[in-house]
Length: 456
Image (cartoon, rainbow, N blue to C red; front, side):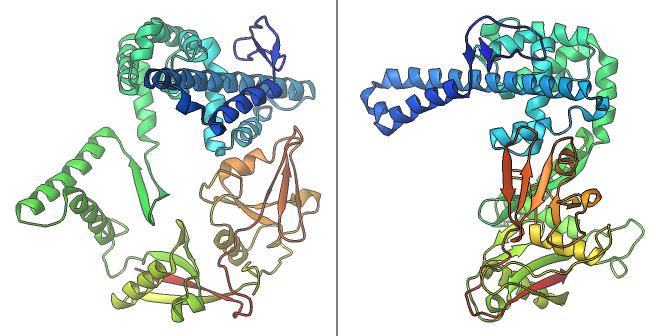
């Protein structure tokens, strides 16, 4: 079968059969939608329902393989066209993953991971690729195999693929944990030097990240070398066991979480600093004056997290005041109807620090649809080189990857009078984004939003 009349670029193989394009996928989706809308599930026996669930899972796996084939073909086509125009090799693939991500309605990071797998799986993991196309394994299973063999030369990677995925029945029965463990064992046996080099590199990639969780909670995740990670967890476990033995009513998980917070917040910011000299931690909380002083239920926003309830925002402010920490207040004017932040312009090319901070507070996270990564770059929506102004309206907060992607050939951006940014991809597909409203302010209310800088 050939998808949209093209071949999978990574392998270069052309399969016989009729073209299967967007209309065919849409027809299949319409049949399934009609089945669900008509209550077709109720017409099946329990055994038939289980069989249908398995068949649907296999179809979903095959469809994800079809997406990978299409993504690889798109990548090959774009790179070939740009090579013919004399584009530098390091720029030929720029922006393709972002187009794939937009089509899949997911973040650019996930789009890059999907495209990376699509490039290597057909040629370098042929047994896993065949199982994926047949619907026997998921994209995640093939991703694990690709990740664990990424450090190996092609010869050894092909060998691990055959050893792990050569028996399709056994491969299908493996859990993700088993796939990862088997790949690691075979990789270490075939090329221990590459595995060691990869481990050294991975240790340099240690980091801490944060993302929102349900019910105004957060996940703070640390990627650590195995020795330090196990030691941290063991320390927290020991603190929990001691507290529980002493009659602490908190659960083990609660004690471990509290011990982690207390240990981090109580530690000096620099090894040689004392508590008296270390700089305070700042939390930027944006809310309306009526939400703080009038008890209104207008939402607030905590920079680095996102929207939070007004009640929680008031609680944060009150807790900070009660602990004798500093609270700095900065007034930000907002439109009385829309709640949009009022701005000012600058003639400079580089965004001044105050204007940059204003854009960061306005956008919160990367403006690219489905991305939501932290803002790393303040970008000219309409490029400065083509006359774009260094202004609040023409500025947008982007993550590093999205900013570089839009600088690829044939990407265009235009800014509307209402602050909307329209981005057109090389294929002609377009997406539009607007700055989020900082607060929903009732008509006639004072056009005022207050930023509380809480220093701890």
